[in-house]
Amino acid sequence: MRVAGVVLAVSLTFAGQAPAQDQQTLADIRQELTVLHVEVQRLKREFSTTGSPTPSTAGGTVLERVDAIESELQRLTRLTEQLNARIDRVVADGSNRVGDLEFRLCELEPACDISKLSQGTTLGGDVPVTPAATPQPSQPQTELAVGERAEFDSATQALEAGDYAKAADLFTQFDASYPGSPLAAEAHLKRGKALDGLGDTREAARAYLASFTGDGSGPFSAEALYKLGSALGRLGQTSQACVTLGEVSVRFPSAASVADAHREMASLGCS
Image (cartoon, rainbow, N blue to C red; front, top):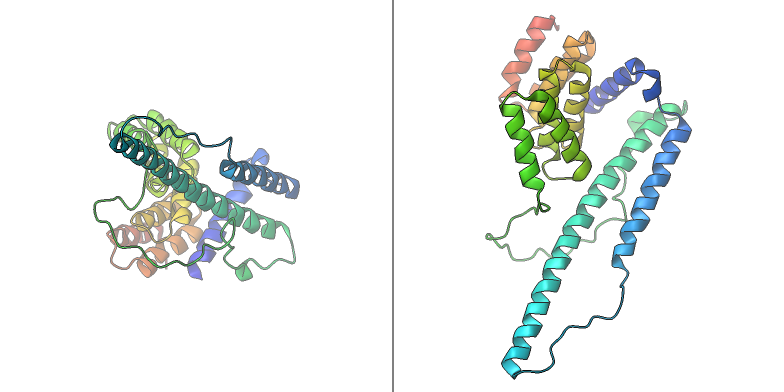
């Protein structure tokens, strides 16, 4: 795929120009896999019970006991939904990290052909296909953790106010606090804009790349790809910039960023 070549070219560009301490060895990547395995094992312990449930339903009238049972069921349902949302996020984040590590391991192996890497399996195994439940319009499709939206909005307000240093810090904290968040792609994109505002073009490009690779077909992917190409051009990587900018119209022909990408290509003299 052409876009895979773009991501590969950008990854190799960063790998070739990053400081020495950013270069990862095979041992570093294996260590990351070990850490990830420990995190998965800790997640599995969430399914272990800590004792016998002791709901208090004794005493009172029949109606009071029924109310107590109903209240306990509601509490357990809420806990189950929260755990399900958390596990889904950990699985998504873990799967993305494993895929990234496999890609980097392949780069270190001379005999490995990156173009033949297949899509990795979902962390924990494939999710079984079950009949779709009846849609409930009143319930949100994606649940956010407590405080997640508030922290995202706070970082966005700092960006809009022109406080780029604060915005970059807040979006970095957001990514660390909520890995695999539904808002991750937008958060990376806005972090890139904040870093651009600070004049840190290289780190801004990394943020745009994280936004695009995290969700290559979402509502922010076209802008992230355009911003990445523009940043590469400012870094002097004209060839990679032209390829990246050219992919915007190929993958997102109706996006507003197509016109911006064409103007940037003209200014770079892309053929």
